[in-house]
Image (tube, rainbow, N blue to C red; front, side, top):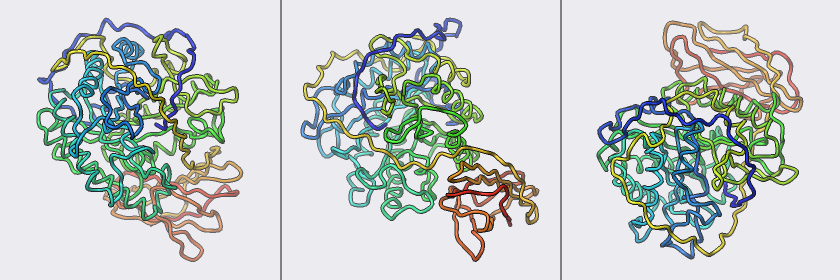
Length: 546
């Protein structure tokens, strides 16, 4: 998450849906239960997650490295308590993501993590495990504008590989006896910090820098995974989450991104972040406070993309960060949550994790894109319970059980660490370059022209100044098709961008061909992709497929 460190007043509301779950049988999570659940089983069992944002991931200045006391409260948030985790569990969340910035504490060329910080992370993990909750533990702000402990480029590849191997070997050894409830996430939003394409790039036409970065990220995911597996114990089959470039949809959908090779079967999860629709959820310069039919297209396209490359290929997905900033528009955010989680609920192998940085108050215009508090960490009161209620009606999984489980190796509570005195230098919030948000005016039309058993259907979404055409290629035959080509007449559209396909021009037609991962279509299956253009569009498009 892009960081803004602020603490503001609370809005004290009682979360009406919170109940203490007493009817759920108490279970014990320990080494004996192992990591025998597949990635799909784990993700399907997660109800909904919550991030302890701007806490153990808070970091200080490079000039003070290595820190000898925890920066957990450095950005203004209180220390995480068991009582906080209990309140989150009572509300219906059964997954906690714990972002952790490790690098600032490490010493030596082998990046040794000090005992005091490892113990503190261990303690917070155990708060969650005690409640029979899933835990996502990652390496978070180890890449930032002040210092990068790794960089996704060839010039820094050797030291970056060394960092991931060392850090994940140490974390792996510390937690190797924990069962399937603990999930590792290799890294957070890996990207080229300061680059003009730090937060967004055209997925179908990445620059040479981005291509190199994606290749390095693939490599670092592999190095981290191999290090985790090598520590043995339950880590040999533990579920591991891996992101693409900046954990964005573009980063994982670009053709060169690949999941790592794994010695364990069915234990990998795609990690992606999605603060969408961008202008509603995160933007600060140009933004909207309304959520309606005019900006649902981003959410629809997001899940269509994930399904086409990952979900339909039995690769589960965790949306590790999502939220909609508080623009003094609770009723609109309720609509957003209802629609977003409603869409996610259509897929059994997707889980969503709410980002929370404990910042609530916005300015009167609602222009600040970084107000993502859902529970006040001091009062332990929920700020907008209506939003949580809208989410919970769409999720299903094993409820958390307060103190229903025990960690395999209890760790004594460390002595409180003093809060560092220096005031951190605020970083500007980077603004990704978003795609235009369409106003859907669906006009489903089956393409009359088809070749053999391949058929194309399309839907036109037009918003006056631009349009999208969502195209589905269906294989109605009884045999697998290994490749396909779609032709679109230029008289009907002008393609400015596309996703999940390659686009070339041939005379009066655009020639659209698949990526490597969606070139084949099983019998009875289909592939979805989209094209986008500026200006107006008619009610029909001349599309052929072969």
